[in-house]
Length: 206
Image 1 (spheres, rainbow, N blue to C red):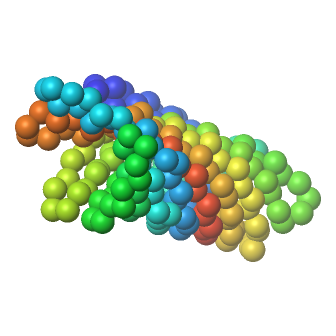
Image 2 (cartoon, rainbow, N blue to C red):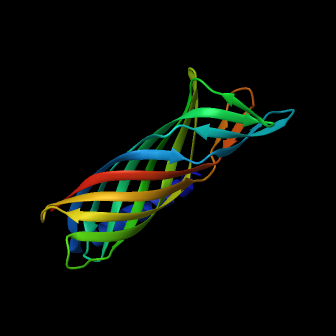
């Protein structure tokens, strides 16, 4: 897994290095709501396996990106963070309220955006990103983490305020390879991860 992540990071660095000379630099910051889909979960130990469902409260999403603009398309590297509390756990037909449990996600993504430029100051766009995600599950004072590949699709609208400043509104679908959280006594919790993100931000063009 570490080898795959290193290869992905190397490819992203090469992509940005090879394209930086021809594009216009920009930086971008976003803030929004992260709405996790219900997760199918499986808890296994040495004797048995139990399947269930996690339901989550809406949570916070924030990200920062640095990239280059080439007119009809853009590329950037993005660091993002989200956090959601676990609301309920469904096991064998019963829903159980959960108190102090949460799922945090930190990701690095390499993105490509296609801008649908026109004569107005409103520019629709679509984007695709690939990278990796580190997921941390907290329950009380304990926590477990796992890292895997991630992907995202974006649809948005850039609003030109000036030559230097754009406001940005976007919807994003984010998915990550199912993490497996293991503890010291041999129990393993596998959790599906997919989310819908509504966000707004500011892009500064140089």
